[in-house]
Length: 475
Image 1 (spheres, rainbow, N blue to C red):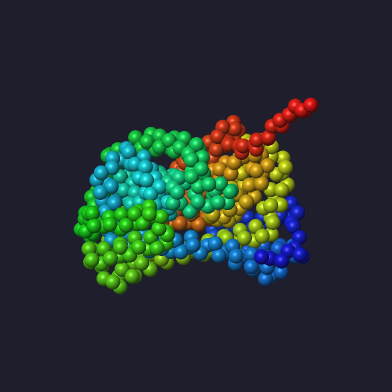
Image 2 (cartoon, helix red, strand yellow):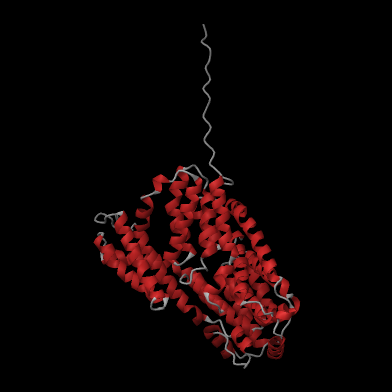
């Protein structure tokens, strides 16, 4: 704990200045200089140091606030590195090529988008990880979509919508467990309450992808490219049921609620063994793929773009982003910047509609600042929880909004960890898939509708007052 005897709370204008300085560095760096987000986050940290020291923090205290917050990046960072190993292993084992090969042969172009939505939803519900779904089923469906002539942005939108739907409603998901913990609720009450917003938005999303899919038919397929890709996959890999064993192992382990990191690594190890025994890779080649990803120069553009990915090193930039984003967020949280900004208008919130709107905005702002859904959920939940309690609302109302916004939208901002991971893994710019992430846009609108109307905004039961019984006076 930091000693706070000499530390002053920031005023509204001082807090606004600190936040504006951090945002200015990042936005100018991206828009004007096209600089990497990691170095911009690091510069923002340096810019905020004198602001905090002026509030009475020593440099050692500032450093401690950064290090404490950065420590929260360890688990997701390890998961990321393990997922990178998994992706490379599953390509070498023939798992991803098998999914692409049979997916192209089995799925009609008209129903590809809605099929992708449903498939990624099921995988994500079963595993509880949106990143794992994007890095496995997502890569496979991107390959299928490309060969069927579906625009990459549309395919990615369906993948992301499905992956985050499953992530939200799965009891195995870390964010789904985190939200009720922060707000003081219960896991399954939180999941049931989310269905009120998630299911209507999901149904509309499915209808939209179905309607859009009718535009594409067999005439849109580049038959020559597809034939080349299918021939290459068939000749290069031994396809079939054996390469699907890693998928079965991983899904089984995660459904049994085994820890994510060992489970994902076990899926990678099984993939590596199949790559050696069934696909003919040497031990040294397999270890190299674990570290540096799968590399191929087939001369077929489609095959190279689909299969050249994965490896532990592919995730190092993202881990660095996590460290800097959480360090920056920790400084803003420890200095009281966000509390000062919210305190300036918190007393004016008297209606559920305004409360939901403000919570949505706070969730998006903390997501943009902290660079991760975890930071957004923790900060927004901590800051908004007293207001929900003052209005006598149950904690599942707050936890639902945090997931409707922070969790759903974390891959839509190009500088967040999820945004960089999704764009890098699927091989597409954030701006190309952002317009088609229908679920991420629809869910907060449904949530806001409930806030304005009061529907599904459950209140705490008032404690029953004991009735006073007046006894007759005995004479």
